[in-house]
Length: 238
View 1 (spheres, rainbow, N blue to C red):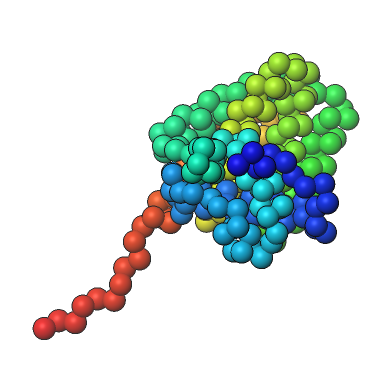
View 2: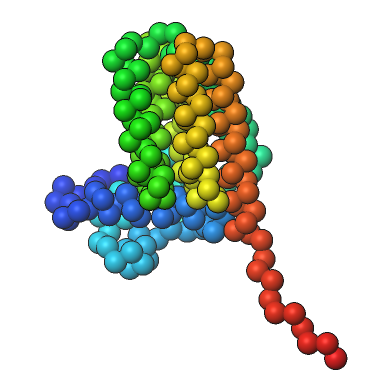
């Protein structure tokens, strides 16, 4: 599988977008439990499934390896990594505390230009919510939180927040598919933005922590809903 990390220079037209779609589809399946730990991900089978060449598949798998969702195991090739629900919840709890620290510091340190950028991003997310566009909102959400990290003006803290976020990126994306979570997420952003506008870092911190823990709860409900057996028809009474 040495070729996994060598993406062909002559990428096909729209190859980058296609690799993103493949990565997102596999991410959702892994995070929801549809693809269980140890499941093999064979390049040609995935290429056939998504109607693609092996190049975007290889790139999608490379990104999943970097995120920790899959791993390369010698002759077995690429397989889904083992990640317990308890481990995922621990990661969300850690992320909640890191994000809370970041927004508290950012509230006091961000420049008017950084605040304006954050407001612009937040306002732009309204249309994504109305369209229930999870892919667009997920991309926005990443930039929104990264702007907060940057506004701390503490490079080490921003790096740590980014590292934790990268480990959770798949699960933060998948939780947006639970019920009306995407709308609730924006409402929570709205409350955080209000605290930032008022210069209240402590309230912004509390609201960010709750925002992250709500995301963890949404992910848990999403997985439970996917794993819940569908009731069949009631048997006829004799």
